[in-house]
Amino acid sequence: MSTVKAHNFENSFSGRLLRLLEEKGLSQDGLRLLLGSTSTGLVSNWVKRNRPPNAETLLKLAKILDTTPHYLLHGETPATEGEDKLNEAAQWRERALIAEKKLEAIQGAAGRLAEIVQGSLSMATKIEPELTDAQKAAKVAEKMVDEKLAKEKASSSASDEIASAVAEVVSSGPKSDGSKGHAQKAHGAKSK
Image 1 (cartoon, rainbow, N blue to C red):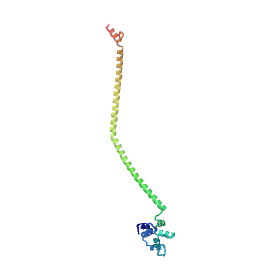
Image 2 (image 1 turned 180 degrees about the vertical axis):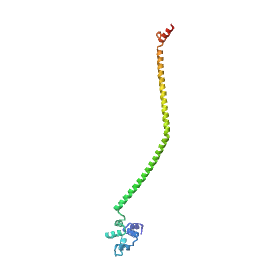
Image 3 (image 1 turned 135 degrees about the horizontal axis):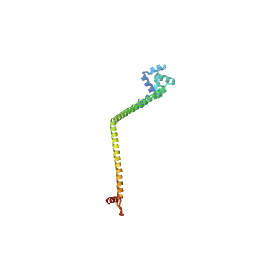
Image 4 (image 1 turned 90 degrees about the vertical axis):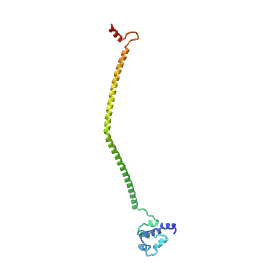
């Protein structure tokens, strides 16, 4: 038999019937007896002619071979409502497993993040006394700067007062008109 004919035979009613008989361990004659037929060539005719039996016999045949009439005729089993629900349940189970794996990954990342935060807190606790000392030193330095600025301001005020007094003395000095200033008058009064 050529490859094409063999392939067509396997995918035909006759091929499926013979395969199911072999799987069940039944002979053609044994099937005939289970169907309640007295015709010795009944199953042989179906196989040779590749012709299925009438609808009533097809239903009996499918029941004996634990399949469906649709499979015997077309080679495919239509999904039943129960199979649809099983397929849907399998899909949900697969989705649940994927979600569970994602959740485990998130929990792992959260655990690593918690370890990092804990390490940071531990480090901060160790550094805190040093920060407190540095803050105290900064406050002392700020106070010293404030005191120095205050002294400079006071010194600047004193310098301004001295400069003002000097300016007053200088301005009251000899006049260009030849008159004597206050300092000369006072000095002249003493000499007399």
